Figure 1 (spheres, helix red, strand yellow):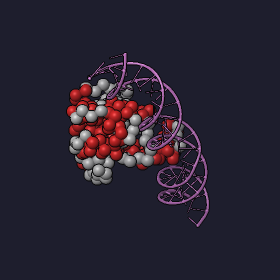
Figure 2 (cartoon, rainbow over the protein chains, first blue to last red; figure 1 turned 90 degrees about the vertical axis):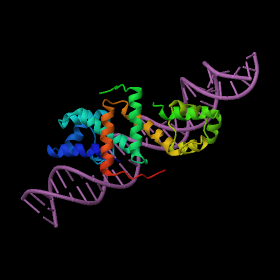
Figure 3 (cartoon, chains in turn purple, orange, yellow, green; figure 1 turned 60 degrees about the horizontal axis):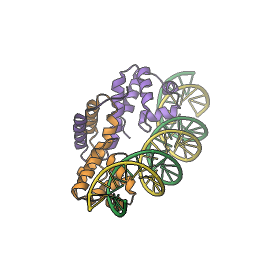
Figure 4 (cartoon, helix red, strand yellow; figure 1 turned 180 degrees about the vertical axis):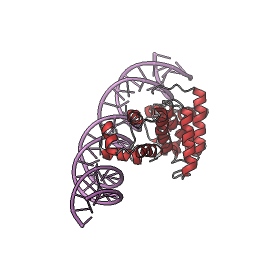
Length: 103
Length: 103
DNA sequence: TTTAGTCTTGACATTATTTGGCAAATATAG
DNA sequence: CTATATTTGCCAAATAATGTCAAGACTAAA
């Protein structure tokens, strides 16, 4: 699995010298699970991303962006012509005009 | 759900005037299920995409591309700044150098 | 080296999501 | 109207994800 997101929160956490245990508590999950999220073995839930952004005092939108990017990466990393897939998607977005739902 | 892929196979099928029933048989699934795939209510499995490409006599890679794009679209359509997410992914691809696995 | 704290891993249980079939409903021809 | 094709809703089975527990590994301090 991809680690775009995990690496980001790990870096932020280390900068602030917070133990995993503490963030895990905030998210109300086991430290093992939190560890896996940082390593990219488990995917954080959307709501957990919001909590993490707050706890790590970082930009929520950016974190969500990396979190989404991680998911996308996992899909296209397995395919040839990953870049071309992105192009198709980009066109579709323009065409159907995106309508964001959640924040 | 997105219909990039479904619309494509529907168009191809109609061009060739093949009933859903026939393609469903080839895929060894119910016509109802096949119908859902065209409408974007169900996702085709990767192997099914390969079979469809053959049955519809169309380019396998292109169909796989649309199939992947569909999955990606579903992920980012829910988020703001969808385009920016794609950018993040594009950068990651360049960085980690993709290694395609399957065909 | 022992201790204490942190982090990591693997096996497993639990949940959630996805997928497919069936039956019924709704088009679409002919 | 009749026959065929397509679509929909609902349920069961299959699959994937999420989380915990227990044990192992790593580090730094004494």
